[in-house]
Image (cartoon, rainbow, N blue to C red; front, side):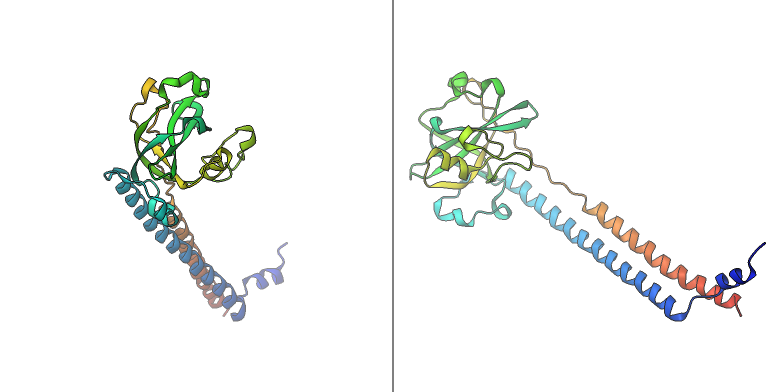
Amino acid sequence: MTDISSTTSQSQPRSTLTLAIWVSLLLLLTVFLIGLGTWQVKRLHWKLDLIARVDARVHAPAVPAPGATQWADVTAENSEYKHVQASGTFLNDSQAQVYASTALGAGYWVLTPLKLADGTIIIVNRGFVPTEKRNPSTRAEGEIAGETTVTGLLRINEPKGTLLRSNVPADERWYSRDVTAIAEARGLQKVAPYFIDADDAKNPGGLPVGGLTQITFHNSHLVYAITWYGLAAMTFGMAGYLVYSERRRAKAGR
């Protein structure tokens, strides 16, 4: 048997104060969600601008790599992936092999200090070698001696290893291209705070293989913006429906 008093109570409209509180909360949530969506739109424009700037740097003619007087001004924002060139002599005995996983398989990046005429040093990622070619003696033909010119992309230092593994210089275990730590481990002075990813110019003997720089930017900001705006619309609709339903209940109770 239906409880008449319960049914009557449920059909009664909420108090004006209760309705106002609920509607206010929903409207505040709507504004918050719109704010999140707008922030994602701004992030989208920033990311598209970044991609355009990086693309322009990569395909621009090579310029001299920043010298010692410019090092303090080198940042990811103004210099990452800039097409640069430097000339000097490789310090092959001071190279380091950094673990790499590439389209060519697992192996190592060969990072070799390049000593310039002014005595400063730029560490160059000469490219990839497979695991069985990690030891320089197995690829002696590619150990360039004498003056040479390197062209490639400027990359920002990668300190302290990766998210899962830390560099262990004492054991020659390198998981990131941390030029500061490599320079310290090799006793090098006046080393640039960046490195150069060498281009795909073929090295003697075919190793290391350069030109494997991956330039990718995660860009889901449009999806996020649509999601936040969609939730904002739903929340606003809930507020409107709440007001509408309460008005109907109020009319039905008269």
